[in-house]
Length: 113
Length: 112
Image 1 (cartoon, helix red, strand yellow):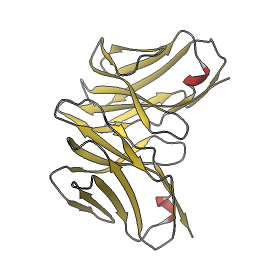
Image 2 (cartoon, helix red, strand yellow; image 1 turned 60 degrees about the horizontal axis):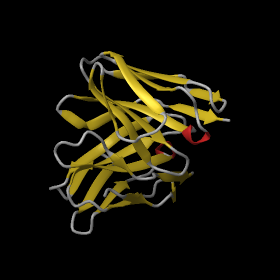
Image 3 (cartoon, chains in turn purple, cyan; image 1 turned 180 degrees about the horizontal axis):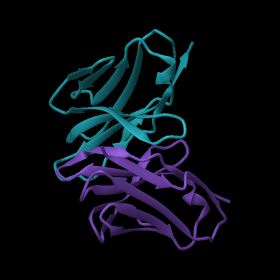
């Protein structure tokens, strides 16, 4: 069966510091991968999605970036965090051809102070 | 544009039915979804419905879709304390979409 891991579970970072959140998927090959952000009191917002290694599409321009160095690894990064980057970050995966069934990881709660 | 709306809170007594409502604006939605988020956890896909259906039932869960009014509901029969969570409605648009558009979520509290 497939599982998706995210770490860390919680993170407190000062403004201006770098960020690296990691997501890995087990039990499947060549998945579509997604990064979402859930800001307090708001719905989920798609940040990035990837259909393959090195292929990243950005939905929202911002100071975040994503990379997919391996087939089942998706990384969300920032060089300098802003206060507005605080939120709950969720990674998700889907099978090729079944992109509407997305399965989510446990999430990372990021607080920028 | 895509706009998915839900009420923020719902409280029900254990054993009663819960109905969580959602409205969306884009008439070209192809699939509509319900996700459950338990405290401190990620999202769990509960069920989804294709836009040309008007009802789907899965054990205690019933999804009703009124495409004319762009209204989606999730009914949970015999609600249990373990059903306490945030429930997200989501839609996907068109055939080439790679993402889902989520509502703000409804926090369901089940009172013992």
